[in-house]
Image 1 (tube, rainbow, N blue to C red):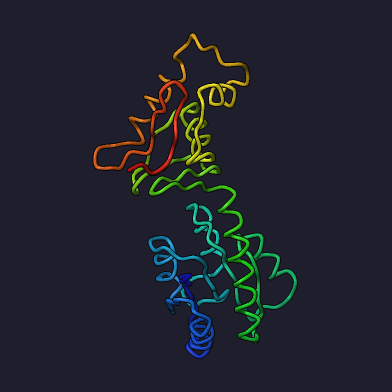
Image 2: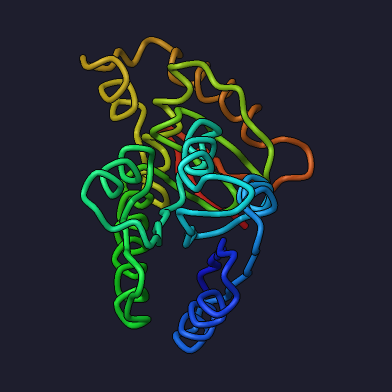
Length: 226
């Protein structure tokens, strides 16, 4: 169930948004204050935000700018009575993903939000690899397992990416060597085993399940093992 944060000071409009989103199966949290909304957005886990452009205690543009500066990339649908082109452009350039003017149709609001969520899921699928509780973010070049950051060298990152893209498949040492260095594997070297062992120590910390399985004489299988 997608979680939506609605930042809107007008109670009638807010209740209309919440009711419509709720009827479509979304979990909605409503905040009437801009400052409280910014705090919620920075500390909570939301799939998208509907944001009033004109808030009494905080300009919606400042909220968008701050969220983007802090690396929060959830879709933001800005809603405002300011309908001229310049204001819409300002909202989009500040980091908003779409701009809806008041008064608006609740069904159009939901449709626009659905488009943003689909687009965001597509981007995440292209840039975020997941195997079990292990995540590899190709945009930020970061890795996490069970909520803990993993400090990987560039070579270890590329090696893990190859394993995750081929999870559940037998990966030979020759495949790994060519993927990382681009030329033929020398069976007389143990460089692949050394790199895999170093990576394995970082990925398989105490208390986590094993993800690497060594296939004698062949290579490895990566993924959840029994």
